[in-house]
Length: 352
Ligand code: FPP
Ligand code: MG
Ligand code: MG
Image (cartoon, rainbow, N blue to C red; front, side):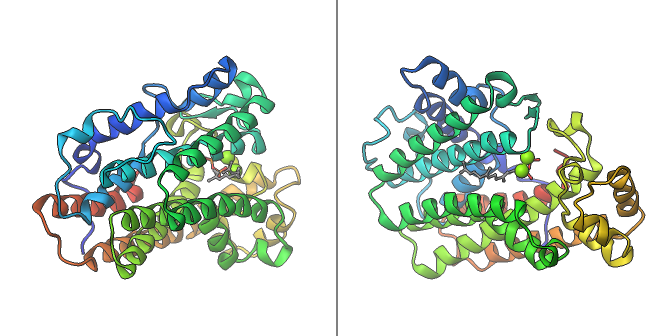
């Protein structure tokens, strides 16, 4: 398949259902405890929902593999309690989109504490508004609510997949902060860490969608592959934007990775050309002037181009997976597949 940046707009295809998912998310993170409600709702407020890449991907995946076009009945917000088993397949798949977004936001709340970040989605990071302790507890609360909703699906395999994601997020973060000297300069290690940190959530949630859609093992494996490759491409571009974007355009601090001592793909590729980067990587850019020099060396190398090509490779793999799906059974399913293809090229061309 050729990646196209033109139509269809993947977000437009699922726009109305995405609103339904966002509205249910807003309602499902409320609690009797006022501060907790405020904290947990912070990134679900209207206009602060972010790109909603994950729910979009998941709703498109659901339709791509379905033989029915979702009826408008599914656009009404499901008012049933989060612990009640939804009867219809589409409702269960919508809940996977909610759970995935809750886990994602929980990880961001924790991440901004760990990284001591002060902005996210163009907003003050929650840790700077309500403090680290409340931000951590709000993240825990979101994981708890996600678990309740997950249990309501009464599907052990799906519960395992999404629980594995939480383990992987934690493993990825720990791997990132406890890397040995050999691993610091290893691209393989970077890819492994990136799978845990970013791709596992996309891979396993896509697979959960396929399983709940009653797909056979081979197809749910393909859905997993799509999410894995999209996730790797997404994070590679994220690491690229950390160099090329601005704090204003990103809505979060730029040049954050070097400042935090992290050698991401652009630096690892640049080190192949400029060996003087290696000792700097090993000491985590801790000496005065390291960050500036490393940045200069990255710009003065193929590091950014190689990172872009590596991301493009994974985006292409993701698109190839869509081509390997069994024939689409409706026109709508075909359109949603094109939407999934379009997401892969948008992940590459995004600037925030
Ligand atoms: C963003 O990365 C962070 C992640 C993708 C995952 C963070 C995971 C944890 C903090 C472990 C705890 C997990 C849970 C489920 C509560 P980044 O810091 O490189 O990117 P950024 O620029 O968006 O901050
Ligand atoms: Mg961070
Ligand atoms: Mg981080």
